Length: 389
Image (cartoon, rainbow, N blue to C red; front, side, top):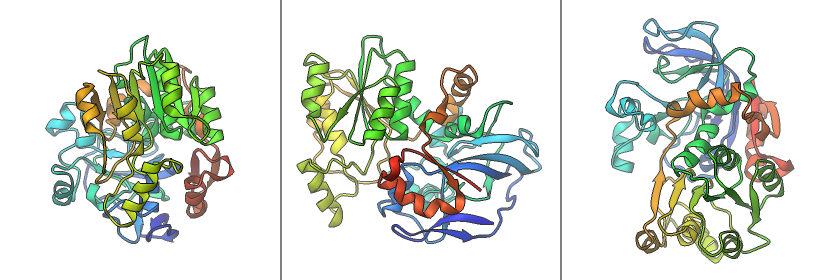
């Protein structure tokens, strides 16, 4: 079969790889019908994510049709159309039973490596670093889905791929980022980053009843999309984020702050961000925490900071004194997709949101290597790329 594979920094290839097979009776094989490039995929594309190996099949946002089912899988049958969450979950461990799906205790088959890196590992993930299991991903014609009797969700009749594809990751990620903020009707919610996750965080905060949602970015197409979703926008290249947030909140600061950027913040005119790039180049730190610094400084005392953006390692010069002295609460983690996917599917069925709004580019799977650069560099108005086999 054909698949998109990582071969090194900025080296993505459309390769021929072995077809997946059933390896365990609970498995299923899914014929991919739609997949997408995620912002977190850019971390290995740019060479910042450790644990990658040349030839790894990538991609964790995918859906398709079940073409083969293991003998013990009673949930799925051949012909079912499914969306597949990016987290691989056993459904039986203590964390899964608590609903903490993204920290499943059994599915990272490289548990020792995950434990060494993070102290305790989380769940296995599709198409990502070997620290999270090294599972082949969904930017491929066919995908083996382990524990396929747990996470995959059948798609109701009448919904298109484009409407449900993002239930695999970015819609639940944006929703969780807002949901853990315990949004109140009087809240001002500030969201750093208007990429795909930021767009869903905006719409989620609106649906959850925030009084005011503020989107912070510098890309015109993303800011326009944010305004269409109900946000006030701040272009950080054109005005001071601090001054504007002070104005919007009457000097109190946002009640809730969401980081939808992660380890590759691009505030190029900021001195701290420029220093972060130097530190990365000499391996003093692995991640660029400009957004975290800004949020911790600007968030209202007793507020909540929600971190949906991916961080992979070490950060420097973070004002943790502000966190402690202002009594901030930090909420973070990979998304518990299965905690939210049912209610989000119902929102789509009920017509309360159509996630396809975020798609700007639809291409063939063979076009993926070039689209990684287009997406990373935000060229051609690119906000979200969907690929078809």
